[in-house]
Structures are given as structure tokens and as C-alpha cells.
Length: 399
Ligand SMILES: [Zn+2]
Image (cartoon, rainbow, N blue to C red; front, side, top):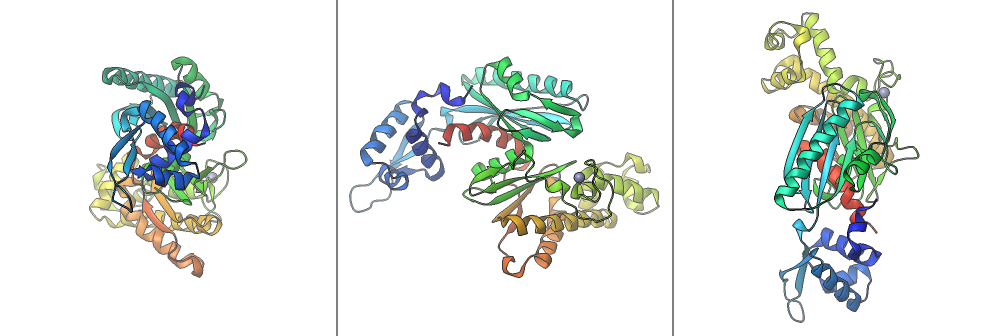
């Protein structure tokens, strides 16, 4: 089932092309659309008329005066289409209802009872049912559901190939959701969705080459090359979490040693901090936990950083070093214009990025220095869910 089935006006490629140009460049006039698409002005006029009558496009006042009369500007109608974006992480499922501008109208989050697929299915059903009810209250139709999931995802068939934190293999998630709700479903890995959401609506808008890295208990990235997501031959592209950064470092969940994820994931930092507390270091940090090293959590390491606790700052600095090293490798291979960092790390990102940038500066090829900026995502903690919704929009707009 495709989202386009419910929108006959977009069955042909020219209307989709025009709609996507209006999305990217609007408000825009008809003459500029003709110039950008290469379509004949009379074709533009005819298609724009049908897009307006279908409620997808609106006339948006007059533009600046050129040689002739002032042109009428066109823009998308944000409320014309609504979709749902669902983020399936290792500990929770969250969902949002958005319009064409990715404005979030409603949201819902469910903490998983257990880290397994039955709990994920329970969470997805609750979140989707809740958002469908909200859509009914608002009297809007939901046109599709986008799912961004932890692990390796076959984004063609919507299958979770492997989700290590959930102990899942070969689960046809998209088909199940589609059958239950009778709605089109698009699915991809959460880091890929993050990259796509940032490309369309966040800090990556208008860029052709972008890397978006999601740092949490696992680490992954979405790679945008020439304006498109790059998935690799078996959907494994961008797995920056498994780039080796310490030759004989700790063993990673993947089996390798010294992967970025084994030293820079939140889980790895918490484990290391507990170990250091047990060795008698960081008495100020220990006090925050009530004196029990094993009670230390990520929130203590946020608090410690805000207080300027020395051990905590040193730990986040080390994360910056390891992340920076992995990013240098990615920069040398992909040469992105921007690298965006998001995920659960966001509350402490300002303690991590300066070191990461410094390492990148020191270790980059001289000719590449200063050509890649490293920033945080623009969509904050909603970035993955917005990205999930964008998976559906992509089907709609891309010819
Ligand atoms: Zn690994």
C-alpha cells in the first residue's frame, strides 16, 4: 500500500515534481517553477490549478515586482496532509502527529515494560491508537505511518533485520502495522530517519551531503549523499558506532574490540564512571548517588557536568575525543558539509562537542580543515520521530 494511492492528483510524476519544488523553494511563483522544472508554462498553470483545487497548494499573496506585474506566490497548505511518525528505541516507543510542515500537533510516549518485541508491539499499538484518536478529534485524516527503529532495517520491505537491544531478528514490522491499521507504512533505521528529518526540516535543510549521528546507548548514523539517503548493500551503511577507535579497547556488543560504541555510548560512560567511583575517584560525584557507585545513572552525569564536576567533565571530554576520532574517519570517506549530532546525548552535548571539534581539526587532512561543521541536530529530542514522519513525506514528494 502506497500513500500516493489516496492522492490521485499526484499519480503522475510532473505534479509530484512541482509539489516538491514548492515545498523546497516556496513561496515561489509559476514562472520560477517553469524555469526550475523545465516544464512548459502552460503545463505549470494546469497542474498548479489542479493542486490548488485538491487543497495541497495555496496562493500566498504577491511577490516582488519584476519587469511585468507582480507574480502570485505559491506555497504548500500545511494542513493538507497529516502523517504519524513513530520512533522505536530500545527503552521506549514515541509517536507524533504532524502536518506537512512537520509541526507537531500531538505526541505520546510509552516506556517499554521489557526490552523485547512483544513490549514494542504493545507500545506501538498504544501510541498509534492514541494518535489516531487525536486525529479524529481534530477531524484530520492520517495518510500514513512512518516508523524509525533501532537496529538494522530493510527499508524496502519494512523488516527489522536485527535489533540487538530488543533481541529481535527478521520481524516484518511494517506489514503487521499496515495490516492492523490499513494505512501505508514506511520504515527505516532510526539514525537514517534522523538524517532525513534534519535534511527536510532541521539543521541540514538544503544540504546535499550530510552525516547525522545518533548517540545514545547505541551509536549509529544516517548518511545523505547527493541529497539522498545512502543505505549500503545490506542496510548497514553509516554504522559509525562500530568504527574502531581504540585498537585493544573493551569488547563491543558486536563482538569486535574498541568500537566507538564500546567507549562513547551513554551505557559505556556510565559503566566506566561506576568503575572509577568504586576505585575511590570522584567523591563529589559519588555524593550525588547517595554513596552507591552502582546507583549512578546518566542523569547523575548530566548533573555532575552542570556543576562542573572534574571527573564528569573528564568523562565527557573522553567521549568527545573518541567521537572526534570516528568523525575524522567518516569525514575522510564521505566529505560531508555538515555533521549533526543528536540522540539521548543531547543534554550533555555542549560538554562533548568542543573536544570532538578539536580532534577533527587536528586530525583532518589539511585541505579539508574547516570544510565540515559539527553541530547538534535542529529538531532536538523529536528528531527521530520527525524523521519517521518524513519517510512518508518522501514517498509522497519524490518522483
Ligand atoms: Zn561494535
